[in-house]
Length: 242
Image (cartoon, rainbow, N blue to C red):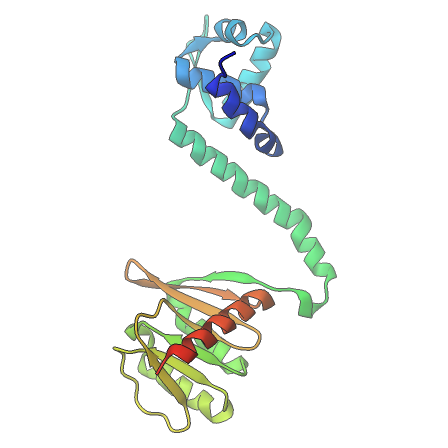
């Protein structure tokens, strides 16, 4: 017997969809309307082998989700929204579910851990990059810095690095080869070509900085695993640098 491509697809995604509270019957109705075009409830019931009573409850759910539209009244016909709009709706649904899981499980569980066990991962907007850089630099020890964007190496950043070098003998800085930095007595500085991104790493935190559409943005984390990965990568660059 020849396989039905639609049913094969539904069979693959049904288990995942059920996690989001989406039934296989709902997926079949939406897919049928998308592929076949507008249909009445009775036509859908007959084509899909679903009872006339049940088809209305399923259509109501899909309307509430915003996946289909009801047109006219007697008899009403149903129309599927475009696939791209469906995908946007599903992504939004996933975001909501993830936020709910974080609020109902992750946050309460984190509150039961000792303060040293908690961690954060935070996106840093362009206008907060430098202030975050200063905060981590001031509080950190065993500091490693990588700078590949000239605009990040402003005079105040240079002075902050210089001040930190007096209290942190382990401070290391890698600068991209085409960027100039004044000589700072006692500071370990190396240069490297074609660096990807910039960053600041201490023994307990990391700030990763990248440029997108000519704007800098960052990612802060005090997660030990992320700090360890960043440290290993910096050490690899340090060995390659001159």
